[in-house]
Length: 599
Image (cartoon, rainbow, N blue to C red):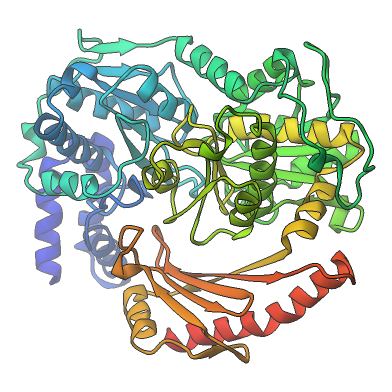
């Protein structure tokens, strides 16, 4: 695109942009682009980036930095996306106009503005809108779609992205995120739109707008407390004998039996990381019958600037520092953290051997612990073999082993909860018990058909309480799982690249025959389809280990997931972990070399 063409395109966008602040920003860039020398060149470069393309529906919607232009999140992009959604609903789901769309938004900059824009477009198209009462966590929106029998749901959030980002997350009437071909159909509808100024906007308080109060949150809390009952509701049924065995435990302690209303006594420090999950999380924990968590004061209130964090992602180093320091001062038993929109959960536990005396559990560890726990407590189901657990191709394979040992159904899905919560489609007649992905996302039952950090926290508290009553910690329970199912050592590599597709094509054309001195026994290319929808994923299997490579869904990166499985022999768990680490080192080095050479 020549500078002249770029300027012309920017001026055409400016004329059609419905956002006053965005128009002013773009006008300023156009004025700067006309200046000579470095200032003009910098403005042109910024315009080129903003008009290099258009944000497109990716992982369940849109996400990007806020600003003017089609390659940013702004009022015009939200209007176009919602006009495309409205057109799709009228064409593919005519009853949706009456069923309506649920709208929710978090505390990020411009979230309320974008939600207002979406509501106006939808009602102007004759589609009923259900507005959640103010800033809300994403799981509440996902729950509300089915609770209200709505046709779709839109959540304005960028989850754990940087403060300058925002997003537009789309759910269908089944309460789950959109999957192909719906994303492509909506994309096509957006491309066919005329001028944005042609949109008819409904009034903020017109007859098609329903403003809900706290009844949605009350229904949500009641539903997750029924799904994950705490001591205030009688708790879970007693666990089997397997729960009483395992490394580090007392072995002969009786099963945990809480009387109704009694307290398990777990001391918890919790942080919502300046996000919107705090009030619902605290209410859920207290209503379940657990002691109220101590909330980190400096991070308790929603703040779109995330002033105490370098990056608002609980996986990032340092994100939990304030919570861990508070837990150390209080002698707490557990640290819990939500990401800013409340759909993910981070967990840390005391560990004298770790730095500062605390260890953050990985998503795979929490996933295996919760999966094993939920299969234990549901073992008395009328038809226990109908139970289904699921995880993704990039997550640990331990849950598959746990499911096999319990003789229940297991599904491996593509990355993302839009696939995990639909795992039952691979197993008709199944009952979804649990699903997770390694990036700290967990779904407990199917009350919420998406990851939900709040219901996951209730399950984790129940697990921790029962472990304590058996004389064990969560780390003891993890030891027991590895003794039974083998050490599952995990590692991850990320390589930045502007051409991830080309690199993946190169790996397909010339796959490695050995990695780290070990022969590659099998290569699975998910791009060819099969039991799973086609996806740009390669899986290399070696003896007792595997490597999974895929492009990032949101960034110009390749991600590589490594796993080494080492049985625990007579030498014991410590020796098995040492052997796994020895095997991982050359595999990790080989993966880094492979991707570095490909880049």
